[in-house]
Length: 133
Image (cartoon, rainbow, N blue to C red; front, side, top):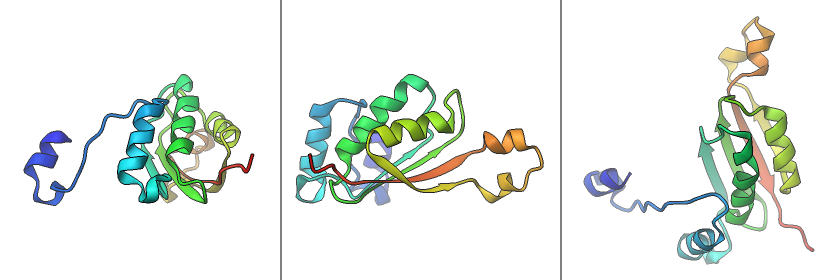
């Protein structure tokens, strides 16, 4: 990413930062530097980042810390690799996120093998609103 940022015309305004899930100091810095009014981001995108069951809780914690407190949106695209959809949804709900959409790509919806469909690639849209407590 750093090389692309330095060499690409389209990337000259891109900023690369390391983010370890659960690192509250980095999250606070990102929000203060880049989020409008420092209150978090309206949308957080994540693709192909869930590989291990143990990573789901830190991911959800990080996402809710990054999202704006009013109606932030988390878009998660993933392929099942050792973590099932139910676990991700359970941890998302526990973190205060609610499902807006659960999308399986059309080519997988049409497959006759239901075992493959149940483990299909997914696109989840999850919304978050900070609790008032």
